[in-house]
Length: 144
Image (cartoon, rainbow, N blue to C red; front, side, top):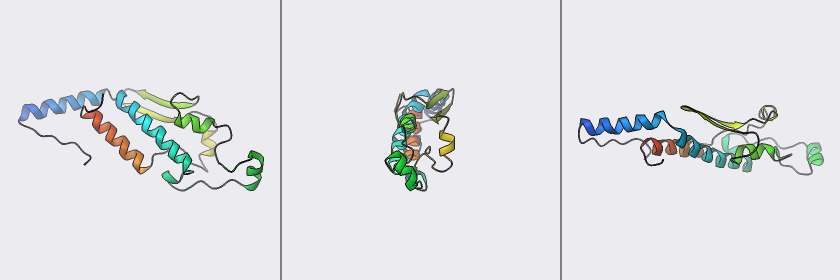
């Protein structure tokens, strides 16, 4: 089961548990870093399935593009884009935490142009579920 269970032996016990959850929710940085790891793993899946895991599979490359590149793999010209989304310290990586908010993605300037035709940043249902579970474990104190 995914959810929050509260077994209250009395008003004081429930109040203490909710106060601990509230304290952890005000400082979610550790949970966000665990979620970033899950998102990087999810992005590996996005590239392996050519986008199918987050929606529709990317269109194939034109024959002329395949000839120029020497291969048929979309979004792999230099390897910088996939690296920025799947490696923790890659140039262009965006994984920022500010207070109770977090941002994940790529800062490579050309990503916005290719994303129109081949969306590459997103979370599959499985990745979203695992990220939600990670946050829940953190809030309940099962993860530091």
